[in-house]
Length: 281
Ligand code: C2E
Ligand code: MG
Ligand code: MG
Ligand code: MG
Image 1 (cartoon, rainbow, N blue to C red):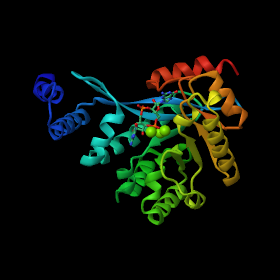
Image 2: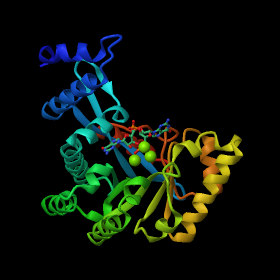
Image 3: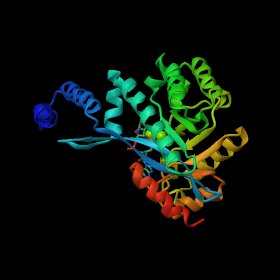
Image 4: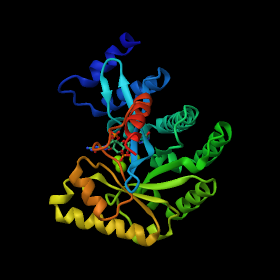
């Protein structure tokens, strides 16, 4: 199959290529093949409960290893998947795969870990989304209270009334909801109050170098206080070092995620990481 795509791949990266559309079309074709040929996989990044100092959940992150082109970031291919509608298929695969993994870990004797799954705006707005979630829960017998859907601010702000209905229905099913990259979108505090959500994930751009950036520290502190007063849990994304960890902890952030603890790991490596790190407690 590598041979088959060779041509497309060269076209895509030909130096000086001016036709952006062609590049897109090619990557779209590659992405369709990737689905069919099992090039997509999930990695899992630990989420740490800061008070207990232990892993409480993981975030599933999509990986695409192309046989000829190597690693392609979700930042590159998710927008293409959204524009072409492929995200519906990919998103369904992600949901099923992450839930199977959650169930498999329990069978392996791990404590039940929250499984956080990123949901694209296009996927969330699709009419089939809620029925799909119901169907997967029924078929897999997963305990939905361990599933958390990550949505961005823009997803919930667009068609806010309709979004609130959908979010409410998801929560009635037992799922948890998180706002991803909080602080980077355009958020109305009024809507935040109305949205039936459980957690805000503080965007990593505010966490970076927080100790030496008073403005960032002020923003993070404000978000945590806002979360507290609205009864929402807070998680800091992208914690890379002990200084950042100490700073967010001093402001009573509840959870954290980032390279300081672990990057996104393959399922087996996550299990090894869990065993290596649970000794400490
Ligand atoms: P996100 O959901 O905000 O995920 C966090 C991103 O930050 C991940 O990048 C993660 O690997 C990275 N990260 C985690 N800790 C650190 C850290 O300490 N420092 C730095 N510099 N980065 C850190 P990744 O895996 O490349 O994913 C990028 C984005 O792609 C995600 O942002 C999410 O928006 C999207 N994405 C990934 N997987 C999926 C998926 O299954 N479905 C959808 N719809 N989008 C996905
Ligand atoms: Mg996320
Ligand atoms: Mg994020
Ligand atoms: Mg993001």
